[in-house]
Image (cartoon, rainbow, N blue to C red):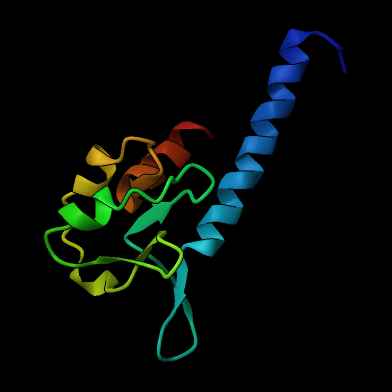
Length: 108
């Protein structure tokens, strides 16, 4: 392995991919049957400053705030995939699942 700036970038990319996978697990819900399923949006809690904009502008009430002020997916079945939460988040801390899937495919 070369120890130059290019080698460092490759290492950082791998670490970032590991973080994304951990977030995806965090953004799963256990349904009534005890099975995990993906939520309609992925929230990157490391980036979220808990401003509540995503919750305030969600037209269907899919998102809600936890006691600590962080957003979470309360009613995934209500999501209409409008991606307002994604477009309005000033910290890019929330992404629609469809967009997240497209990003994953581009990075392969």
